[in-house]
Length: 235
Image (cartoon, rainbow, N blue to C red; front, side):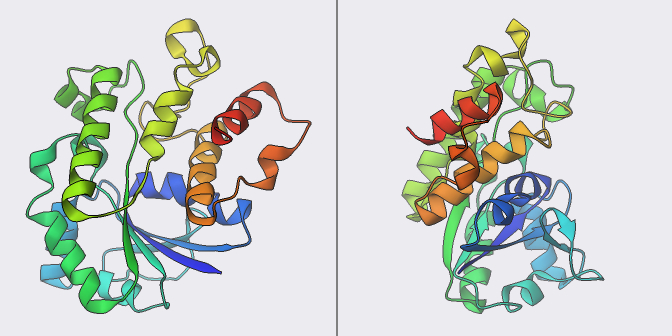
């Protein structure tokens, strides 16, 4: 069983909430502070604060606030994922010096492989104030996130779970294109919805870490939206 710790926020919560349920090969925990940026993670390191929620399937599974150091030593992790807060995920200048400080701290406490998690762009019409960083343009945000992910991962020699790319590709399908009357993959303009959105992200994580498409997506009785996700995962 592969043990994965996501060091993130509500976007890693969305991405990991259904991963264990789709694959018995994965043990996944999310270290959560809502809206937590790379800079905030570093502030937590400096203060030694225990402000994190430690989650399984998107819900707190150990009572009480926990520190990053506690989480890094709670299990014999195989993988630690890191990410930028959503509104800054396409802004390359916001990654430094925070990303290297965070990865250095992780490396000092575990031999786990560090993997970058690429988050997704906001939905068309999203009211999140951070959307202004991309002129309230979903496609602009998608492009900047993809560019930042590629450049950061090349510079730091990190593999990436490209959840953002996958969500962007799904939104090109009329079924998930809100401008054409389709279903939004988001529940509030930025977080993933609890069905198609979270399942799509979980599918990406399972395929990335196991090399397999979850059995759920191989069912013959899937409704149209899940069929579209299954077909995209199979590409």
